[in-house]
Length: 286
Image (tube, rainbow, N blue to C red; front, side, top):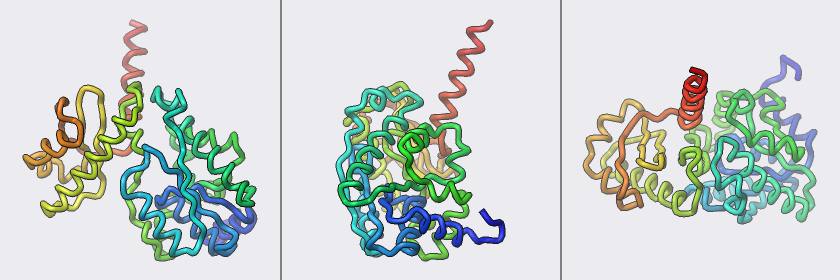
């Protein structure tokens, strides 16, 4: 990597070096940039976009992903994946993402080869590689999946800056991890739990929009014995005071559980699990 090269030059050179490629394309800011870079470097006829569709994909994500793929002029495939058939995924341990990515990447790799593409790339960036809670990266490495953003040293800030430079509509898109990331570790991932989280987030977003409340980050966490709505920290008090929130969560499937509204923090379930594990270890040594 030459230090005088721009992020754009490094990324485009990396895509050219990979050659014809299928992009594991969720529609998020990272994979969208990889897809756009592949098109710029190789041309749309040498690029395939593949979006895995399953119960863990939030409502509304697929249509948005399809629009950008269409705008870029690439063929866009949407295979069904079966994460829920993998016991490791359903068990929802801290390595859940490994089993999820294994299912998704196996499906995408096989489909890519059927369409004449020997290489698959993901949107893993440099920040992801520094995060200790990314077991899905291991699944990609085991399968020889390309990571052009990581390979060229692009972190999340670089990704958003370059996406904005290229006028990609995803440049300021909030992170949209899979729905299973809302379920506390150790609680089995089921179609029911995924669906009610999805319904809840959709209902709360609609409610807030009607109330004139603009929210950037929003998660509904299934904690097993409670539901936790996480929103932008400055909005917690205002949103908690809305009487319609309880009804929206109840109607979406959380009627039997209490709820609370708290500040959003990315990776919160990871840190809570780490704290609980640390506390238990200290207790064991007393």
